[in-house]
Image 1: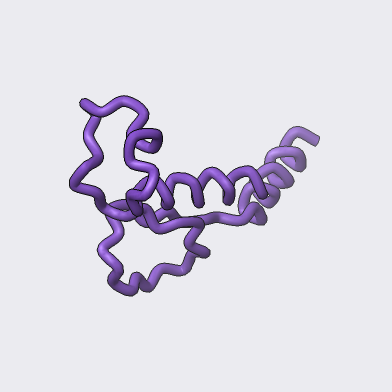
Image 2 (image 1 turned 90 degrees about the vertical axis):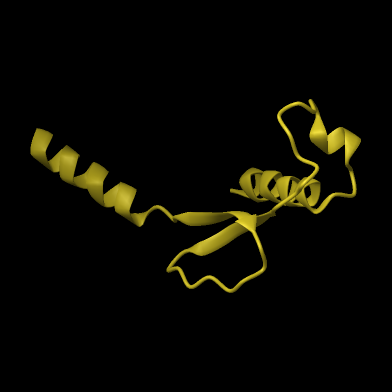
Amino acid sequence: MDGTRRVLKIIGNLLKPVYGIINRDDGREIDIPLRIAVRIHCSCEASMDIPFFVEKFRDDPLTKSIGELAEFILKL
C-alpha cells in the first residue's frame, strides 16, 4: 500500500495547476507553457530602503502588479 500511496501523491502533484510570475516585466511577449498569474513591472522607485512601498507609491505599476498577484492568490 505504501507504494500505491506514493504513486497517488505523485499523480496528485502532477495534476495541480502551475502558474508563472513574470518578474521585472518589460512588456515583451514571453512564450512559456504556463498560465501567467501576473506580470510584475519594473520600478525605479522600488527599493528595500523604502518600507511599505505600496503605501507610499499607490499609483506605481509595481504596486498594481502586487495587488493583482494578491487577488490571484486569494482566488485560488
